[in-house]
Image 1 (spheres, rainbow, N blue to C red):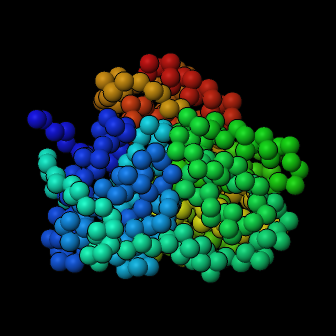
Image 2 (tube, one colour):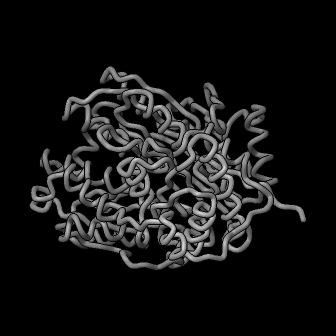
Length: 467
């Protein structure tokens, strides 16, 4: 029997449920993890949990049984949890590793397996590669249930949601936030953040905060096209001044201003740098993924902050955060970490920080974005996800890497970079980037222009050129 090699992408291993993401393959990955852990620790401990996706509890049980069978102690979360809850739990409980069964923002047919390090963030690339190399072709999944392993002292249940909520209550003044003049709406996208905002901000307008493993057929990714209902609720409710959305495992963020206009991750990154440095006097390096706007570099230059650009994947940013003093680290996809918190993306924490910014400054999100524009200039970003087969996707990327696109219609470029994907710096001051998804058959086309119309035109010209 030929067994497929399991490969971890930019953020864990993801695959279609019942096709490649099976109980047996989850067991294989768990055996590889156990073997790796036992190389350096005779009695390792793993914090384990799942989000709201289909099969989460079943796959989690498989992970627990394989790990326990190898003598690895498992601290198993009660109910569904977010990825930041697992990362915080690893740090707080002084565990050696964290595992989250989640496919994050992927379509509902997917599930996935994320690894979290003892530092409270994504495992570093070297450790992930080491685990991947140890995944066996065959695995013994024990028949004994979880109660058996609990009786052996190898499994213990923990309430990570309570721990995380208590932590947030220490970090933010919810008494003050509850009296904020800016009323908040929150869209959980049927994801794992749904209980937290309900608990810490009881007056919030809640959308899609029910357990629905199919996400109503939509990928739980906090993009404007997936959040039209949140936008409409804000537009027809004058007292609502901010909309917050998080993805399936609540580590990514999307925002809406008081007019129901989407505020993307580039703007959120700039807002957080502006708040933490200009208003709170904090310093440190800013670490950004290759697909982030160059306006971040412009703001950091104005504020005297160092910048480092990484390949795509928050694990690269997290690794920097464990070694250096980092103020903000983030990606175009809405995964952002801030100083004073764990080195992990956390949509709820970031949303609360910006809600605090509004409440303390007395300014709306639109007014705060204008403060950002005063520093870096106005810009509009958008992204096209082109669903094409892998052969076509790879052919386009190969052409881009070989510099075979001289221009994109009327849009010419001055230079190109190939850190991760191919980024073109346009003569009009904007940019275009082409990058193949590591987890799905799609090509991502990123673009930034000086207006909404120009950005849409850039994307259309790119599409006509490459397809």
